[in-house]
Image 1 (tube, rainbow, N blue to C red):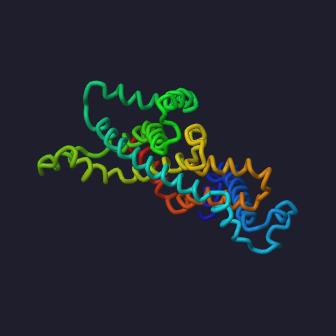
Image 2 (image 1 turned 180 degrees about the vertical axis):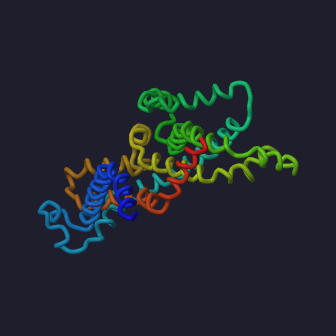
Image 3 (image 1 turned 30 degrees about the vertical axis):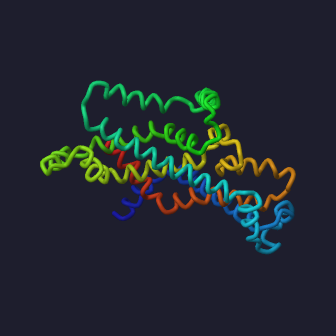
Length: 284
């Protein structure tokens, strides 16, 4: 009996072996690349090019040089401002909108939902230049508020689409009980309904955070001064300057600083991301 059960388990797992192999290979490759970058960030430029990293001592001053000399600290703070402000703005707009679209029946409801879905299929590159021409004509270019507004607007459709599935599957008894207790529709939403979709809110906020933090093209167009540049554009400018400065150790330190926030998010919130996505998929 034991051999039969073992054979049955092996038979079920055998088709998954190629997948396990590919995932394992990808994991090893990713860890190797990330590890190499981290080691390089604590080495010297000659050691990087000679392949003797780790033998020339420990150099944390690379991070100080990247933060101060190469202005990575300024880029980092700009990205924090853009990311947190836009993520909050997206949630403040999309959460009530998705609740209304999911819970109330009114003329044009499906049309509005379809419009949000259609907006997901519009490539940003198609409308960036017309927007730049419009705002440049109005004298609104090179503004933090403008970039935050654009990040907010571009991420609202996905957030609405994502949260609708969560709101649609909350029992109506919660709203009925709140109405009996004298809660207004707005109070019912913020006090009762919004906390009930916390898994979806956390997941979509993490997605928005990562998207905005890593965004490059829009920031390149609308933030073309050092005072406004986020980390993605700042890192590109730093790479361009390497042909003159040759500070590759400082550049790798800057790379670590840039991807550290998203790495921390994945490490500590990966279970919440998976739970939120699977919960939305099951409910939807």
